[in-house]
Length: 286
Image (cartoon, rainbow, N blue to C red):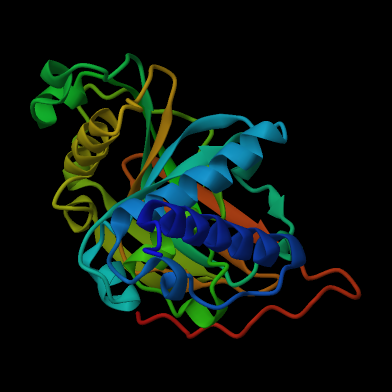
């Protein structure tokens, strides 16, 4: 009997989603999922992401936006991929500036300095995503952000399908408290400096994010429209790293200055007694 390819792919997608959810729930990192869905089947990887997202929504989670990943050439080199990807943002991933993030909710976190956009209108028509100037008019406010990326895959041994399936290696994020109106601000000219416990560990500019964070937003808006899930007014978009990501350890204080938007801080607790030890992650290149 000839095997049903559709059934096989569906089984593989569900098996990959189950593996990632077990890793998340147990806080024990898993093997890559590329052995299940293949190293290059991007559609299957997004199908896994969608399954996990739908399960979270069914459990009561609330979507608040999207994140763009792998926009920095430095980060692409660190991970070993050559294209951007995207994931979803849930409300419970959000932390305020200076708020302590429980390290126990993370596996092997890394920090990125980013520009966040809040949209003021839907981007649900091709004319609205015709170019960077078109999507720029949809930006209602801009904020500095720290994204704490994380991976359910042991030791960050990921390829493009692994990170896509794993919600673009999302963890949590920190938003600045004082939004900047878009008028007069050019994200491409922004500069980013990240300090870990007072020491500079990452630097970059808006040009390090797909050439311009607005271009990253354009890529996401077009991709979201193509898949039938367009960006909406009120959505938060993390536009991608402005420089290399850096490892985060228990007790660390990460400070990111994005000029001219401002400075914000992410603080991390020490693990609670009896918590499982995090898998060892490779120290990121500087």
